[in-house]
Amino acid sequence: MAKRDLYEVLGVAKDASERDIKKAYKKLAMKYHPDRTAGDKDLEVKFKEVKYAYEILTDEQKRAAYDQYGHAAFEQGQGGFGGGSAGGADFADIFGDVFGDIFGGGRRGGRAQAQRGSDLRYNLELSLEEAVRGKEVELKIPKLSHCDDCDGSGARAGTKPENCAHCHGSGHMQVRQGPFVMQQPCPVCRGRGKVIKDPCRSCHGEGRVEKTKTLSVKIPAGVDSGDRIRLSGEGEAGEMGAPAGDLYVQVHVREHKIFQRDGNNLYCEVPLSFTRAALGGEIEVPTLDGKLKLKVPAETQTGKLFRLRGKGVQSVRSGAAGDLICKVVIETPVNLSERQKELLQELDNSMGTGAEAARYRPKEQGFFDGVRKFFDDLRG
Image 1 (cartoon, helix red, strand yellow):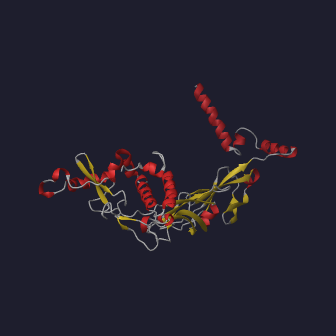
Image 2: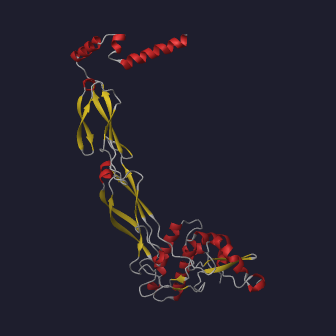
Image 3: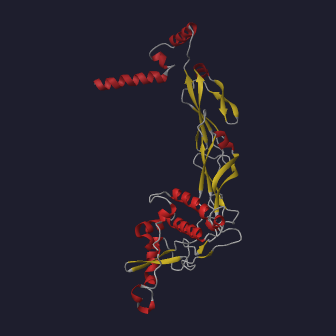
């Protein structure tokens, strides 16, 4: 009897995604599972047919081989090519190790190892204060976890995986392509040498189920955007009891209304009144620990930087604290009354003009002197 098309068995299109194939398999596996069919042999055959189709079509390399060669890609070759070669060596013995890699096979006789679980990433957003001080956060992580009902074996409780009858437990098979006999993993057991005849109903033979796990994670003080925290073994569970992957918590720090961070230093702009800048005095500046008094000398100009040592961020690696750097920005008075305007005009008049004014406004006078020289040079 001709074998049915594997896509037809699962009821999916030839361009179906892996997700669609898995969804179709789970639906049919529940329908034809031996626990539900009360020993009906015909339905048991259908269950095995569905499982075989799923095994092939969810493996990228096997699916490509099936799409190109059909069922012939998985019919095991017998014996060597041309009756063998000198010294009794099988042709597949000579070339199997080389061409086996084309199909993902290992060395002759080797079985595929159960695959380690996938690593996961969780993006964690923190405020600047939380990143600087550190905190404990609770994360809810949806992932594939170890199936407790079958203890990760994939076989129903009280049973266990058996040697694969297709490859006799070797985990590999030979495929004849023209004059070559190539070695590849067994499509039935996926190279493991074991098959599950009575799958666990909770995980459908996968050994893993989808769960959401809650983790309490301590975020160390001083983390910054781009930092990663690795939680070993908190990724997805591995196949058939293989080790779990890791979980990486990726940190992103939100922008702050006052401070900008550069490494372990903090920067902020501090507005300063016209009179305070001219006469000097004390002002209050913000820090992450509260306000501090800062002494501003007379005749302070806009853009001047003041460094407060140790008021930045404590390094998560070395423990050394950075600095807080305050940049002064002189604020021009606005919404002046007529009397205030008169006073400012009197102040300006008192400074005189020309060389006399340069004493009070050296930058302004120097700038215009440079402009005049520039145009004189052009005319000259």
